[in-house]
Image 1 (cartoon, rainbow, N blue to C red):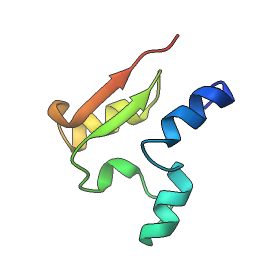
Image 2: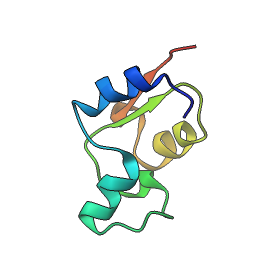
Image 3: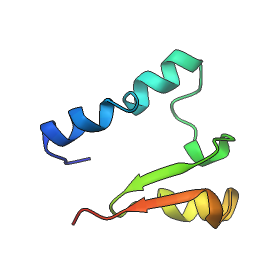
Image 4: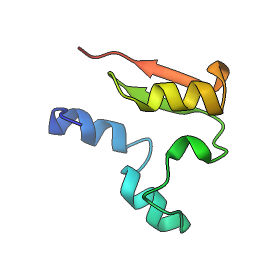
Length: 68
């Protein structure tokens, strides 16, 4: 994701990077994240992940953030 480093650092105050989270929990990094049973999925800007989340988890679990 091509976001300003200051913005990324601000976001990490609320969580950790994707790869670190998957490694910390022993999840397979190559898996589509929408296969996991998270309570919510946040997607920043356009991504194919939106389609997977809506199809596999439902619209109610999707949070989209548009920055462009």
